[in-house]
Image (tube, rainbow, N blue to C red; front, side):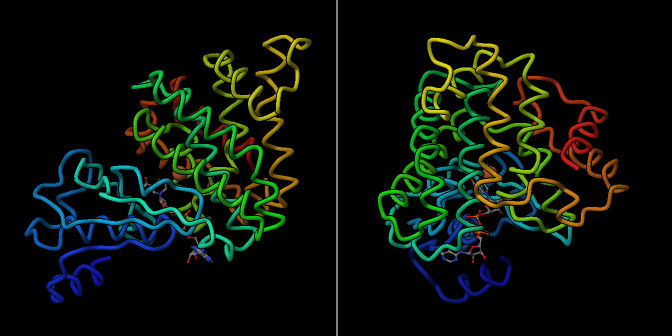
Amino acid sequence: MLDALGRARAGNIDTVIGLGGGSSMDVAKLIAALCHSSQALSDAYGIGNLTGERLPLVQIPTTAGTGSEVTPISIITTGATTKAAVIAPQLLPDVALLDPELTVGLPPQVTAATGIDAMVHAIESFTSAIHKNPYSDMLATQALKLMSAHIETAVHDGEDLKARTAMLFGSLLAGQAFANAPVAAVHALAYPLGGHFHIPHGLSNSLVLPHVLRFNYETSADSYATLARIVMLGAGEGSASDDAVSESLPDYFEALVDRLMMPSKLRELNVPEDSLPMLARDAMQQQRLLVNNPRKVSEQDALRIYEAAY
Ligand SMILES: NC(=O)c1ccc[n+]([C@@H]2O[C@H](COP(=O)([O-])OP(=O)(O)OC[C@H]3O[C@@H](n4cnc5c(N)ncnc54)[C@H](O)[C@@H]3O)[C@@H](O)[C@H]2O)c1
Ligand SMILES: [Fe+2]
């Protein structure tokens, strides 16, 4: 990041184009923001700390995942095991260009992981304790509808442009949803896994997702019933009770992850069992995200969730 910023400053550039996955787009955002600014990158970490104006910024995603092309957020690596977020209105790009053909070459396992990340954005936005509103709900439900109907085809037949289009547009809608009503405990518990064990962002979300859903059940059963009906294409409608439908949401994702041939347990990724307390401690640092969770998460709760995911 700092290397790219140095080159941009030396190159006297006037526009920034971010082309790539969330990692590339997030770097592009900060280059645009800091290129003609004297602010140190570390002073911009956090919410609303970025000062000054940015260069014109165009974003072109090549993964259908983060939605970074429509969010005011940049997440960057700051050390061997740490990442930081810069959240500021200037980071919202001027233009997002979506071309599904750019995602055709995305390998199945990256398509699966980034797609689940986008689905998690929609789910966590829909149950966000803060800023949830009818607009973000509309975006989240539409995003989930598109992606649950197309993720399997996109993974198993990457050249299917209809599925690639649905995933790319779905991930954009999910990005807009969580830019309005932010993500929560799934992301808070996923970040330490990415930091310590270099597990890709989408996969780390997917590993803790069913267990966080079960933990949140007591506060979010109604919302989960709505989402379960969407993802299961109407399963349970008319016959099953709301309780039965909402309880099935974690099961749906466990089965989906299996069909997408993704690992589902931390042990499969060589995460040492004795690291779980450290992960739980680290997750508590993610208060920016945990405040959005519908149910309060203690360090003990986080440990239980990691144990269930192990
Ligand atoms: N800014 C935001 O709003 C936001 C939201 C969620 C996550 N993030 C961050 O985004 C990052 C993850 O982004 P991501 O999930 O898109 O993954 P990524 O950008 O890290 O890309 C994953 C891998 O796929 C490759 N790749 C990308 N496009 C490809 C293509 N079309 N064909 C073949 N290979 C391709 C990349 O080179 C990389 O190896 C994390 O740092 C995460 O924290 C940001
Ligand atoms: Fe994410």
